[in-house]
Length: 77
Image (cartoon, rainbow, N blue to C red; front, side, top):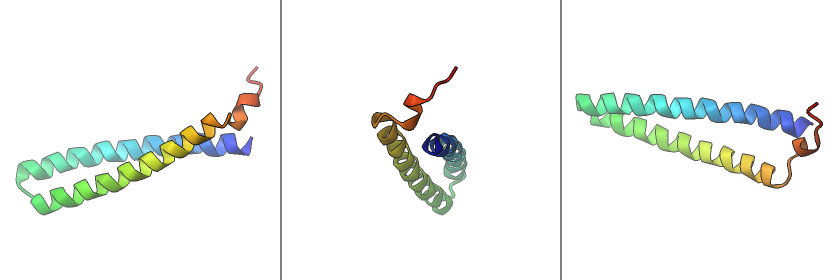
């Protein structure tokens, strides 16, 4: 049961990271339009780091679900 709860919160983490990535992309576009290349490259670097973290969390989520996950034995009724 604890694994289910922890992975439920990890799913929220995935959403938060995805929202941060989308926000950073919008910022990067504005920096690029304004010709602020240094800020643009820093923001793109932050995006790459966030995407790596997102992928790592997503892989751990899929790894858990492929193992049958603890919630497969939970009665939902």
